[in-house]
Image 1 (cartoon, one colour):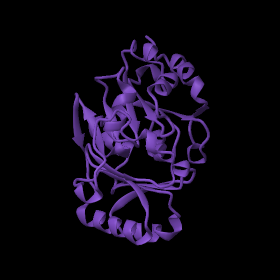
Image 2: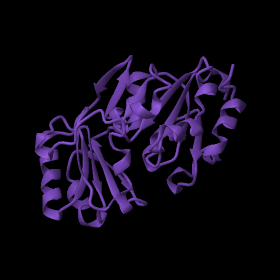
Image 3: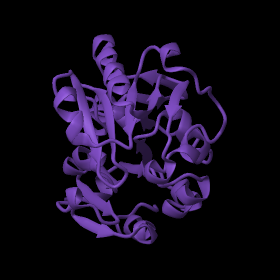
Length: 248
């Protein structure tokens, strides 16, 4: 493969990354902004929560909500919402099992988390104070639902009957739910159908994105990403970029 022809790099904003400083340590803005290649950020977070972390990249294409929403040419676009009937069933499960949750619309959200020591999410939600935490019944057009502090065995059978995608995070005992066939890679291809790319990722929701990359780089340790071409820790990302001629 000729990597100097690869024009697009996908980075993944990991959920343990609450502050802008940590994004810059992952991908130093001074080095990245000098490149003529295109840098895309993909995240499980909605666009709302990506913006404060990426103020050095005001024009870059962003994929948020595991592919359910994007920022394209400065405008936020919803790719796909969870079907109304499916979300009604999810709300019934929340009520039945007294679940904690983070539910995102295109901008506002509803958060109930009674065990943040386990979920480790509260400080990462709307860190820029750009939106409102509203009642669940006030939200419509749901792009993503994160069920927190769950025992998956109790609800996965019911969730599997719905027309949704489910990503399980064992380390935080959470489930990410989006509309069926929505993921970071699928959305990337909707907007960049022919583009070759190098992908960096660190979590289960990065599997498809890395599987289809011209070069896949797994950051940190995650057994679902063992297939990646390169394995590095977060401090070595810039070294990989330099080796693959990121800086022109």
